[in-house]
Amino acid sequence: MSNKKNGKRESDAQYVLQKVQPALLGLMDGSVSTLAPLFAAAGLTHQAHKAFFVGLAASLGAGISMGLAEALSDDGKVTGRGSPISRGVITGVATAIGGMLHTLPFLIQNINTALHFAYGVVAFELVAIAMIRYKFMKSPLWSTILQVIVGGGIVFFLGIWLGKLGVSD
Image (cartoon, rainbow, N blue to C red; front, top):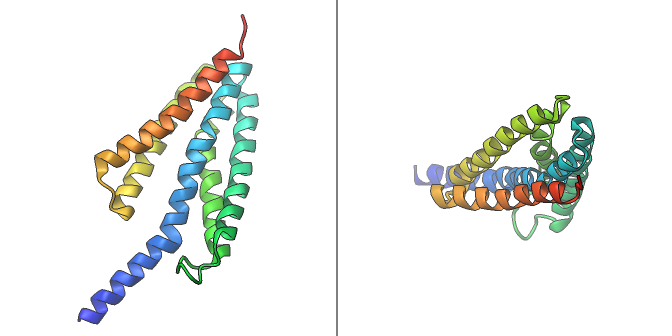
């Protein structure tokens, strides 16, 4: 009985280490790293379709970059983190998804409507990331929420500020 429990715990720990952690890393990076360019582009151009393509480029570029970085970071033999290709794909796809979630509202042609939808998506993303960290990484819930929201909020407001700074009326 004890060996079954230990085997289950090891299996759960391996799953978190090899699947959840790379996915969470990618989701966090994609969600946060694409905020500034996306919202700066929206503020600078006042055109939803241009902001969408900036967000698309940032999301895909970040996905490729993060996927490669994770795959090349270690071969998994010493750390037990699993296949570098698997981790790289998981991280890269999660990064692209994290960036695209708040980019998709910019398919709406009205910039103000797109922005309001995107603000809501950003809030949802940050809370979802905090909840995933809480569930799988056993991080304290409120400190996790605070860390993710403060970090994401800084980048979010940087993008809005840069979007307003670059516009001269």
